[in-house]
Length: 312
Image (cartoon, rainbow, N blue to C red):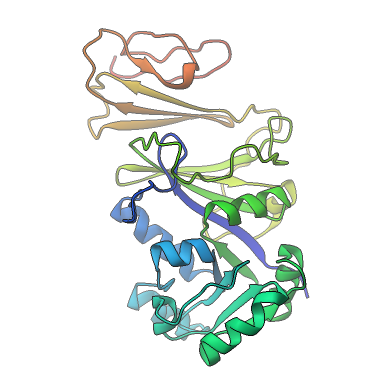
């Protein structure tokens, strides 16, 4: 059986963090984006998280909309997705909310953790031991044999990093919230220092840019062969193969033509996101040193980094 199509979904701050160090969950998405994610979930067969995310956020991992669950049932699908959990330690208690809703759950873990998990959870989940460590390739093979055609992976940092490092992701949905976390103790989208194949010499392809409330949503194809796979989102023209694929953030002092607070522009495979903020200086503020300061009315092309004109 073929492996499922793998879609990684993440919401992050402008500086790449997916949470903060506090015990409370940090909401990075807008209400509109949360509804979009629920729609994407409804188009999948299974949803995966790591045990750290499960313990920290305690999600139910449901399709939240009753209408979308009813539509799945009308198509002959289970109302709820298969919940897939990966864990090294096996530290998963019976008090987690994921066990309280209908639908099947499956846990992949090392053999050393499987026995204790089966004893603790009983019939709440199927437990699959995978030898000395969790093998994501073998996990995908097993899910394919179970009839899973589309898998949505919602984190956290370690799980996303492992999928990308193993080159097993087909598509990425990245939501960007308009604020900073700026705390090195906070978790990031991917683990710093891990070498990933999706590098500057093998860039991912930007397929779609959209706005969901006050968040930006970027859709990338991680591998060329993924372009021939079906996607929940509508197809868009493929950018030219020699496009650079850069992401440029700029904070602009004022913007007459985009009063909502921010604006996105796409140039081939490049993307510029402009956030309007209050600054005292006459010039706009460019983040990450990507370009020198310039007029607040124009984000100029500098050293190959594209911009967009505002106002005039």
